[in-house]
Length: 138
Image (cartoon, rainbow, N blue to C red; front, top):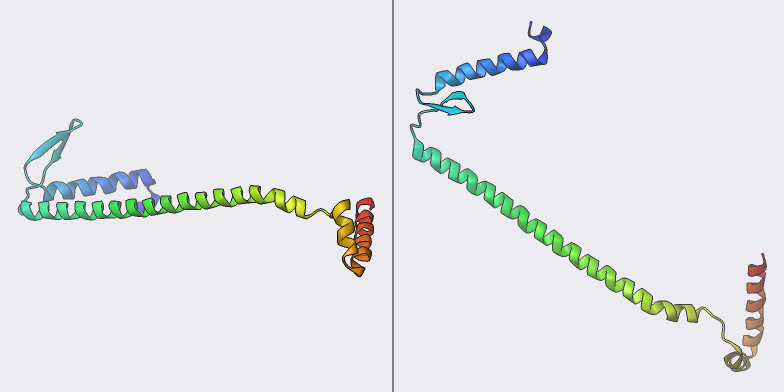
């Protein structure tokens, strides 16, 4: 029979049963919230309940503080990582000019000294120039 009821009806019935059980367990004291009468329980061991609540609050605060410390460490790590990236990028810009000039072949005053210094250098230089021209034309 429960299976044929809609989920809303089942939820309502379950809530009614829970309310009845709570009313049986609660004492005679009442509290009004939003025009609804709520019966307040009688606290037999109020100091024990207070201690339990404080203990739970302390656990929650420790947990939140632990997350705060973890978040602080993560933030610091991200900050350091960004600083490293900025430095690496700065070095790349500084070295770009040196790298681009090092990829060029020596021009005439230096080239003649370079090619005349060794026998095979002139032949290798001319082969290199020819092969680079082939690459650019194809």
